[in-house]
Length: 289
Image (cartoon, rainbow, N blue to C red; front, side):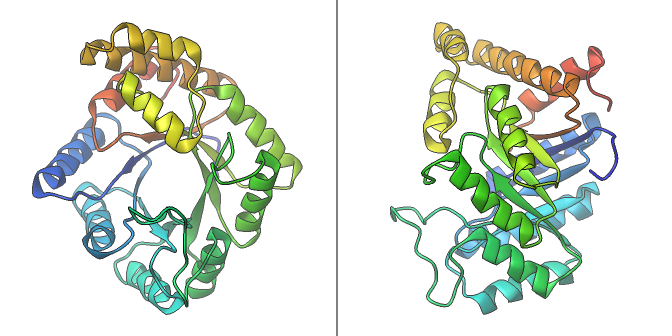
């Protein structure tokens, strides 16, 4: 990201079953062969096996497929000492890139409650990582349409500024379906002094119900035209996927035309839409792979 060349990254989630684990490895192999992402990220569970599998699959993605890996880390359910131990274990595993997040409340808990000896905010986690491993590359999340719990977008950007001031190296945005939100967000960030790269996060919609669910969950506007197109073929999964790829293609083409050279795809551990999207972008010479 320190150069002007295009970068493409994708996000995986740690599997909960053996079958899901095989799906990740299959997807990782296909993407490595066909797309060659510049790096990948892997999300983080609130505790137990999911949390441990983040590190396990981060190592697998690196060792088996030669990916640069950004492993997620959250404040949820951990004391400061436990977090330091996890950070050092990443270093011991040869992982030096972390996406630092506050994290969502565990299932069944409405509000986020920090560990009694833990951290309440992502900027505190960034600072802890920077103090523990000063040379780590640290990513943080940004919300073009504001975090659902923030009162205003300006308040949310002020919070993002605290994360960057604490030592964050780059920002990856929550998914959005209307590029105007991203452009406005970047402009607002730059005016507040946030100078690090801001990577747009995109998710090719897979279906009508999915896009509405993610829109509600993340506070992302679903454009009326996209909703109409998906609804018109809501009983045809293949047609919905084609519409989703075409919509995201339009977003990426517009971003690239406007000088945005970094892209991050939320792929839900599946390869189909990502492969179709990148093939379309490369064939029309928008994207160099």
